[in-house]
Image 1 (cartoon, chains in turn purple, brown):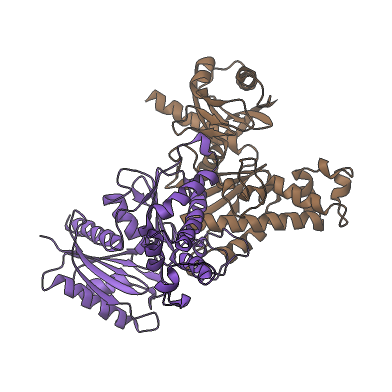
Image 2 (cartoon, one colour; image 1 turned 180 degrees about the vertical axis):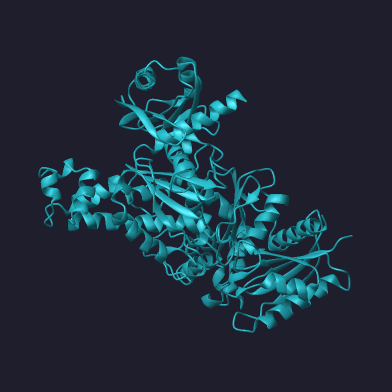
Length: 319
Length: 319
């Protein structure tokens, strides 16, 4: 049986996984991302370790890399990645030589979108928007079942659309970016601001120190009915609907799929988002408003999409 | 020689024109749009008069209709048009029978975009955004030289993206829509607010009554160096760049083409827009920022695109 491995190179962790043709994940290996200030070789040693651990001595037919950063349109170089040491670097070719196998490279949000398009929430649709709500917003535009890459390979950077003039400052250098209001970071910020103001189980969850609050704590609290946590999801969900309405006005897709860590809260996030979408979308009474659905795949979407991309490339190499 | 006629059915006027294969406009005919409260037959009588005037007794090979409204994805029905009497109406088939020729139907902004893609500012590019700045913002997304129509045929409604939370109310029922800040209406509003506050030739141009101020007066004044008029273009141009940056973040196109009445001011509009685009676009230092260029065609873009669409459909009918 062919061995295709996906590797998700995120800002905080590396996940490598063997993925079969049905998008089922078998063996996995994890590493901590060494950070952006290390030598490139240190990061690539960590990736190599994870890949070899998954392979466990078997011949590797192909590796797909899902990188948290800008990848050029040819899929050869990581142009820029805020949390990784790669800078305008021909990563694909170097790792293909090092691992002596077919290697493909794409942006992590694109890989997650591929998983949803081929095996998940978007598989019955031709035109879709796929959003990944994690620390920030990853995104992908799918038209005619093909991913739109753009001139620079940078299509889908929805998170940095400015929705608030002179709004909150963003790591990208801009201000008022959508992801400052709608993301895991925004969720935590909204919840944190209420700790000490209102009774909430979050106070205990973070051990009395709001700085220790993280997204999964807010999700868990919201699921038990905590008002502060639910309020944070309602606010983030509302911003999700407003931003999705803008994208739907531009592209009029058949479906909008929302994945990433924040989407684990399911309807607590999606219900307020649908309300805001219906309220904000132009001509909502004269059109089919696209369903806003939760992604099928969770944190493994990136490795699944990357591994499937590698499987396709391997097939192409053989023809 | 084949006779293909484009008809632009706008909110205030109807323009019909004979257009040849080189996008050259020959005979034209104009009518005033009867308004949205009349019977559909009154509007269609006016269109028929204009078409027959252009034909001048010759056999018509095809007519392309560019309608200021939502057209369904099949190009059969006008779903909704704020300034016209058509409501979920199978306009194409009815007029094809009435005129006994091939009739095609599309949204006016899509038709203008087709003209730019095939003969104008976008013809050397595969992926483009085309904006028409008139009373509001018309838009079109071009990918792989094909127009993106969307699930409902409503793609390209950029003007109703919300860029200002709780911003200015919009005719669409929303608030803070981009076209409230970036359009002919916005240009006039910005200029009008300064009349009486600062010395400006606009005071004389509108005969002392700011309510009589219209866009072309602001363009003419800006071209003579009037500070108030130039300030209005600087403000609208800045908003143009901010909104274009959002679209470029999502789609990463090769070029952005700006047409419509407001674009007649050329660099007075585009220079501040480019500055705002460079300032607002995510990763501007790590990508090729798409050129922001003026459309080739002016008020005739719609009829040109519509007539060329009819020519293509005629060809298809014959095969």
